[in-house]
Length: 191
Image (cartoon, rainbow, N blue to C red; front, side, top):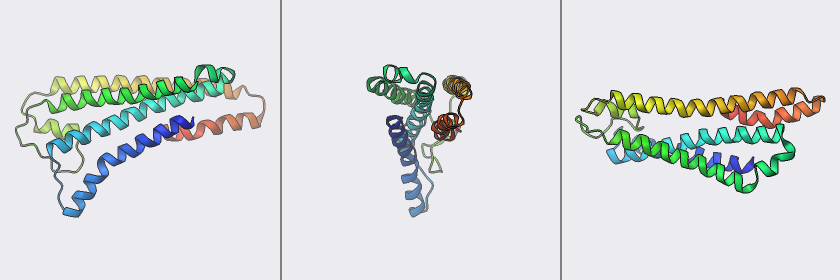
């Protein structure tokens, strides 16, 4: 659990670090513009951190499921090598997802210049600058994003349904309280 929390904290730090420096710079110089390359880098790193974080939250739900529902198999199912592989898969998913979105968005020809009048680079703002039809590209990205989010969300919900079923079968009040207390921080982060 602590290994995954370390990864989660690094991703949270990365998420805020992609937006905050530009925000502070724009506040100091009283401007709101962001360059084309700065926008691409910001979009890539923000999507990378956000996607990897969501995948990591899904993995953490599985970690809690194994810890509560299969405690005797915890070391065999979630040994140190498996934890490293799952964390690497979350980071790789974030990388591939952000690469797909960034390349897809920034391969569009722009006709209204290449500077946005804001400190945070968002895909809808970039699509407004495009001189080509972006409908199919937008639909494709939305469908792909919805699939990834849905799969993670369903997995988290199913994990916690199984956890709650197992916890409610624990005969002692102290045992139920202890099991719920290990899940509460993760549920708070998910919500």
